[in-house]
Image (cartoon, rainbow, N blue to C red; front, side, top):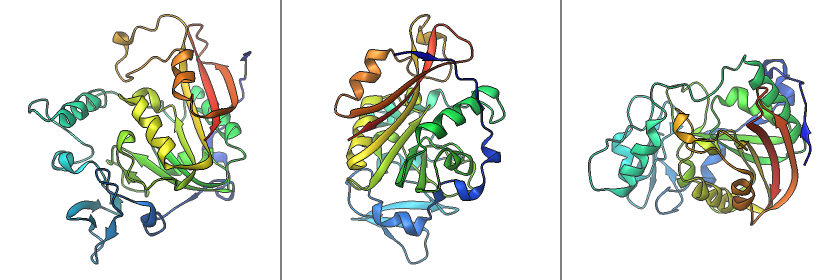
Length: 276
C-alpha cells in the first residue's frame, strides 16, 4: 500500500448545511433504541423524561437519552460517567479504567488545527458515497461531525459525555450500543477506536447494529515504531496494521487509504471502508 502525501484540508464550517448529513431527532431514532443491558425496545414516557423497558428506566437529560448500562447509571455525574475505583462489580471497575483518560486531558484536536482539517477532508472523501442511516460512534460535536457525511446520509451520534447538550445525540458506550440489531446502513468510528478500552467488543457491536451489506467506516492511527502506550495520556491503543486487519476479518474491505500524520515517520493514518 502506498503512503499518500495528501496535504489538502477542509474546514467543516465551510461546508454548506445542504451538503451535510441530516441530524436525526429523538423521535426519529426512538424505534431503534433498546436497553444496553437486555436489548429490549425502549418506550418514551408521557412526560418525555424517561425511556422505559421491562422495569428499567433511563433518564433523558435536556433532550439527550442517557443509555449507560443500568448498573452504572447511578454514577452519571454533571457531564460524564464517573465510576469510583472501589467495589466488586467488574463492569464498574472496567468503566472506571475507561474513564481515567477522559479526566484533565483534551481527547480531540482543536477544530481549527491544520491536522484536524486534513482529517475532515480525508473523512469526507472516504464517506462521499454514504447514504441512508449512519451511526457515528464517538461523535464529539454533532454539528461539526455530520459535515463529514454527505446530504444523502441521515446522522445520529453516540458519545459517552454530555457536558455540551446543545445538539441531539445518544449518550452511551461503544461496548454497549443501545440500538437494535441490523438497524443502520453505516457505522463510523472516526479516530475514536483507540480511545475504547475493549475495541474488539466495540467492533462486534458495530457489526451487530449494521444491516447486511452495510458499511463500517474506520479512521485510526497505525504505528510502526515508538509505539509504547505508557507515554500516551489519552489513548488506550497504538494499533499495528495486523491488529486493525484482524478486527476487520469478518468484513470485506472495500477501500484503504494510508496518509502521513503530522509529518511523523513512526505512525500514519488509515482510512478504511469495509462491508458487512
